[in-house]
Image 1 (cartoon, one colour):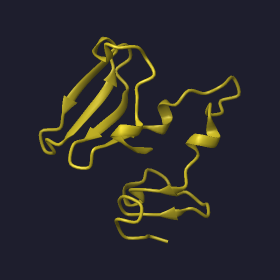
Image 2 (cartoon, helix red, strand yellow):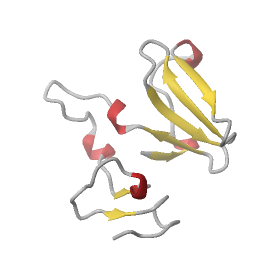
Image 3 (cartoon, one colour):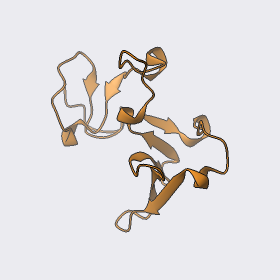
Length: 107
């Protein structure tokens, strides 16, 4: 999930550094990745070139049935970076090599 940085806020109270570690990618110094200090899982990244925040969908809150809380807001409208996918997705959404409408459409 990708957001303009101005549309993103952490849901836990500040200071965020109390719950998050971060590191900068030495091969891509414009990318900063965040992970949970408690369990170490990667939760998000920030790209200073595009001023966008990316969140890993697997880390979204789920209800007792395993469904993503707020699905109507979080459900995908397209598949971005599909060329590096981990599994095939058989649905009617568009599939993009990179960011939607800014890269090759793979459909």
